[in-house]
Amino acid sequence: STAIMWFRRDLRLRDNPALRAAAEAGDVLPLFVLDQRLWDRAGAARRAWLAATLQRLDESLDGRLSIRLGDPAQVVPRVAEEVGAGSVHVARDASPFALRRDRAVVDALTGAGVEGVATGTPYAVEPGTLTTKGGTPFKVFTPYSRAWREHGWPAPVSAPRSVTYLDDTSDGRVAGMLDAALRDVPIDLPTAGEDAARRRWERFVERALDRYDTDRDLPATEGTSRMSADLHLGVVHPRQLLGDLEGRSDDGAESYRTELAWRDFYADVLLANPGSAWRDLNPLGIDYDAPEDAIAAWREGRTGYPVVDAGMRQLLAEGWMHNRLRMITASFLTKDLHVWWPVGARHFMEHLIDGDIASNNHGWQWVAGTGTDAAPYFRIFNPVTQGERFDPDGEYVRRWVPELAHLPGKAAHEPWTRDDGYDHGYPQRIVDHAEERTVSLERYEARGS
Ligand code: FAD
Figure 1 (cartoon, rainbow, N blue to C red):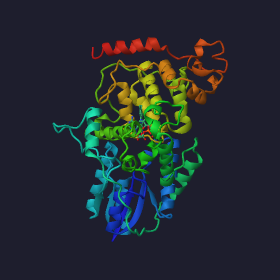
Figure 2: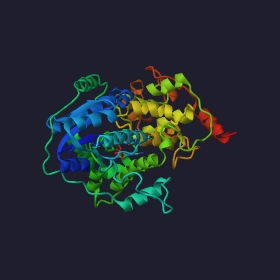
Figure 3: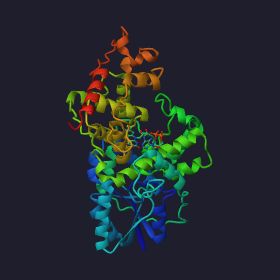
Figure 4: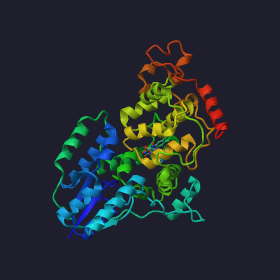
């Protein structure tokens, strides 16, 4: 019989339990459904990253990946009927959008007498698995991560012995959309696909993992793995990375494991609290502003705060931003400009090639003080001291802000202290951090009143 492997956020052939299950059920039609709703919301870099990743997957399937356009609730049952499939195989996803979509698809398949089979998830520990002793979902990261380590994760699965793939039945319109996405890409994308991801990971393990615990906070250094965009699309699975770290208990490996636990934690929190997508998990009850000009300056990297502008420009140029900068720029938008976090989260989701609803919305809420286990509201990042601490030589700022490239060392963080600070057109500060910090704290004190 025939089985459909419906790829979503698991765009790989190695270590893919759902693909294995499909192969055991029969000849396999590998399918991806391009959902216009998601496509339209993504920015050019995100679309290009998906297009490049799909092309690599198609190549590794010898051109047999069927890509269809439309609403999966209609497309998947239609394809199942066309090829006479008895089952549709997926990896389970946990976001509110994915759960809604999958319910609609399963309903439609059931009506048509086709079995829907979910095997595995994009996480080391499936969201919803771990609970507190009281049986409730975790709300705090540290106990979650302890339970996560104790629970452990499965070893990677071996490839199915032999798979017979059915021929490509792609929608003619899709190839044009993907080609256009790749042609119009405004940035240099990383190389896509499983092999490239593997090489990126191996280079990281070889060169940077030993120092990851300290270097991960220094944005001028290539100190992090840059696996996030591949993890997001499931080009690699976290258990592959965790498997490679097996037996290592040094600070680098421990701290890398902890970061992967954060990824699982946020997916778990979102599953337990679907209302926390795009909304406050724990509303603060404070007033927010919507200063259009200042928000535009933030988006474009023209706030006059060097480290903030460097981060925002890295996002536009690379489709990726260093974690320390994500925190600093998010703090600036929420605490210095008093803007509600979803405004910033939308901008990030549009541009980040690793844009991921759970990590993104909860990363933002951690900074804004509305999330689970959030930073206390009064902890407001000072953009100047953050810059001086984590970019002590000003190297990161000079890399991304050419108007400051003439300033030596950490002077790049404080152009206002130099006669030549503004000689090359760098903008003046749009707000005064000390004043805005006070405003934030006052609003917090007055909350709910
Ligand atoms: P590494 O340091 O090499 O970490 C390894 C992996 O661990 C990452 O690839 C990622 O999967 C996971 N990870 C690391 N830090 C976190 C974290 N704080 N939360 C969740 N997972 C983490 N990450 C996303 O993948 N998508 C997002 O849309 C996203 N938005 C964010 C928004 C804000 C405001 C903040 C503060 C953080 C956000 N993060 C997001 C988390 C983190 O910044 C990125 O995962 C990380 O910078 C990716 O780079 P890397 O792969 O080199 O990370």
